[in-house]
Image 1 (spheres, helix red, strand yellow):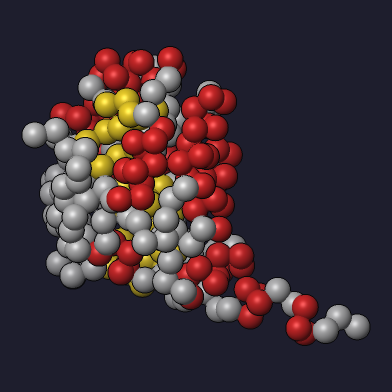
Image 2 (tube, one colour):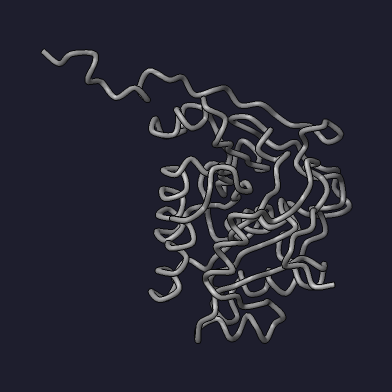
Length: 253
């Protein structure tokens, strides 16, 4: 007979219910207009459509901290993945909230490294969210207030597809003034999103690597791994308002 003392404790932690954050509420991720009208996501970001409620599991307090978003193409060169893992391994619990879809194998590894270090994380799946669909292993981080799940997608959006993944990436990028893009495939959806971000005045950083030269041509700034570690440690902004972008020491004046 297995002793209850040896049962993994996360199985006894209940996943909180879904809460819907409404436009105008203090915890609503962004003010109307800040995440609408984005290229490539007309169904979600149409400025003619009223702002949508955002489903939330966990504490929205993570959005009241400095924030940095991570968006990456699904297939990432090994050299860039290694440096991204190094950055994630050195992130700090007292650092900014890291926001991402964490869908690809590389991103899932980053998520595991961050949560192991108790770094605050916001996960944005490319589909609807339900409490019963949350992995049991996430329950302790949700209960401790260091993990939040957000989705702007309607209940009928049950499975992620290419179009929803693109909209999810736009939503992820809209949640922070600073966006870290380890890699974007030339001509791909993430590269198109980077162009939109730069046109909107967002700060986009990438890894110094031969395979990120295309991002630099678009206008992203390539930083040494040490500087990216500092970016993730020190913060992507200086705001407690989820609707306002902050400033950081990497801002170009």
